[in-house]
Picture 1: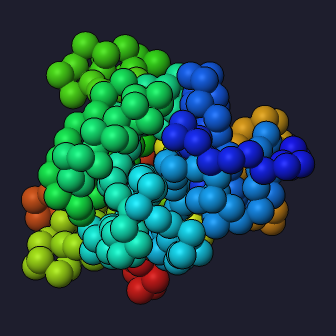
Picture 2 (picture 1 turned 180 degrees about the vertical axis):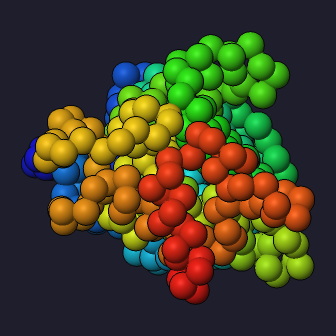
Length: 371
């Protein structure tokens, strides 16, 4: 870790970056490539150039401070730590996805010290940040935004002025609602395609020509099929954003059913210990070892574990597919099977592609009151 031997004098071009997660690290790297002197701080020390000892030290060295911390509490705590180090020469750019009220509270802390505040929520995950192609949703005074624009341009492809402080946060939460719902719908669609014995790649090919295709699907569908959940935007952070959306909905008497469903599936991944994975990991619940879509008589030899396949956190002897279905049955609020009409048609005739063993397991649960 490179520490400063003798701190330089603050200059107009020095930029501080607080929070070195996936996005903060990439933004700092882009700033350096654009020729800006960059000084950084993170709650846990990192072996990076110009790592300083505290947020206050960042403020002493830099006129511009970009904050990339994870949630409402972290943002407000960071600004309290900056405290008296802030003066009228500072411009603080807050990039966290937080509740609009928290963003307004952050602005008040900064402006009490005579500094300027810019709300700058962003969209774009790890690849966009590394390429300097984030999109910023910004709020604040025209003067503050004009002063901050060169800093934002160093890591973005577009800057969209939303309005007053807090409004950009509301827009960011709303856009993430669509993103989370898209990933959840894609995971369920892949599950249906796989259950019917069709190649998952054919679904991707069909979606590319579909009006519903999006940048999110372009990034996430191949990763879901590969079971590649290396984090670009983590489960825990997307869950936090869906919880924010749910809180806002509750206070405004809104029934956000799709958002609630996406939130619950993300929460389930957290319960399974997958919070650090990419949020596309919601597909893990639905996509299992690719096998025959119709029932086959079980073999007598001992089952072999699937090499290289992503598994749930449990290391117990219960097979992955059974454990996953158990999680579905015990956590869902709605029945997994619905029967049309008066229920006269035999179940197996109505659902010929459902594996009989799984169906019997479900019916047993329902009849015993465990469903």
